[in-house]
Image 1: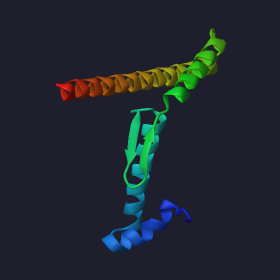
Image 2 (image 1 turned 45 degrees about the vertical axis):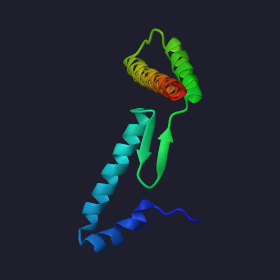
Image 3 (image 1 turned 180 degrees about the vertical axis):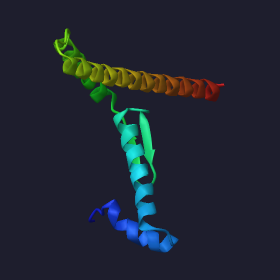
Image 4 (image 1 turned 30 degrees about the vertical axis):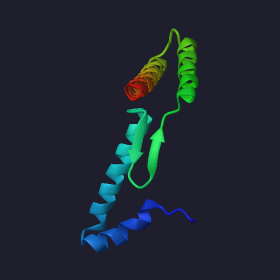
Amino acid sequence: MLPKNHKQYIKPTAEKLDQSPVLIQDAVDFYYSALRKSLNHMKAPLIQVENLGTFSAKSNKLVALIQKYRAQLDALLRPKSFFKMGFRKDIENKLRRAENLKLLIELEKKRKQEFISKKKDGSDK
């Protein structure tokens, strides 16, 4: 199976829908930019992409990522230039997003465990 680039679908789709290829290209670019933003900003533990699958965050990799960000922040404890201050702010934002995603994953695990325990209690009666 040879993977195809999304750009190969623009011209046939434009002809099929009787639309401008530029319009179709803009729609595809918007979709992929929104998808990239969701993945990079760690919006949710599971991100579903139509006809492609579900991207899920791995909690063990997330713990390592949080440790990495904390180590970087420790190294930049007192930045001496504005460039390093901006770099520190970026790392703080990434750390905050990773910790929020870890919290979401833990809440989802807890919700699933409660659901399973309620289901078992209801079926035993």
